[in-house]
Length: 453
Image (tube, rainbow, N blue to C red; front, side):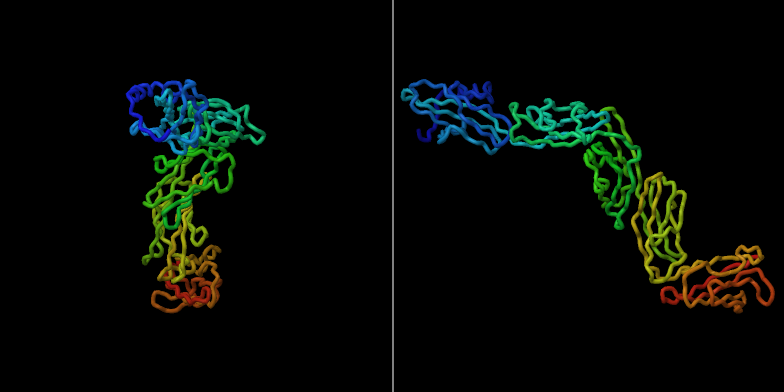
């Protein structure tokens, strides 16, 4: 039978009947039957039974018949594999007593799609499987490749106590169904570890990048635990942690392109019993500039820290009980030698680490630490005027009174002025000039101090 166009009057009648027989495995007039199809692409369809009169001399099939054109394209086979999703009409054309007749069967072929599933692992080996999906006809749960139960769209509670292995884990998958078959349909694989000891302290630290464009959150995840991440009280992400915890699993990177993120909350969620454990930490932003007072540090954070430490070249410089918005560093600063600062805020066992800022000063600011007063009263406390202990070379200190007279000279940093000049101690203000070398660089440091009797 060659390609033909069928426009007989019963085509309209057939179309009326199609909806009532939609997706049946038997044709509209019952003249042929196909195999039980289901699942997802690719789908193999085969004619498994023909119910025609013995007087029929020709039987042919078109596996993609069009009701629009009514053009019959005969196949050379009684089977066909569908590789694309869609609704198809299988047409059977027969010749009976010189009359050509046609019978139809409509089928739907579905492609495999990911299933929208959220797993909530809970204490006591309980799990909630939330399927937010209506694409498939149904769903099946498999544990260790064994069918356990069918699932419905929506919430499904599951107790996996009897399936936990010696490693305290279960392996399984959820698969979608079409016509009660899951062939070639997408699987949602999972591995769940039984929750042992939910921990109250989740966050370890947060580190702001030097360009402030991103930050890293370090936390202590439990295996197979649901986490919600909030940034400034707005949900950022939701995830189920791995059943295996590696070092890399404890780090999450966030973008901060607007430089305005403040606080991050991490919430452990135990959905089955509505239990939540929340932990929070806030970012610290640091900026710097130089003026005639020294290196100015501006700190920005809304966090409440137990203590805050300023680090200068990785050495603790200053500790505050609460974060201050401003600090001026004017000690031990040498012109043209780069200095870098970082702030660490401590909140119980959590640490917030700011971005690092660096300055190359254009002036000296007290390159070696020097007191601004001394009391030569023989109480063995601050009885001589001299710099604090420093590692310098080629040291010379000159002291002048208010009249500009040089009253003391020392070439040893450990030998200071005892306050006597011409046999007397005179209370008042004095000027010092110290010349020394640090790392081969000559530095001149001047200033004022007070002698207190």
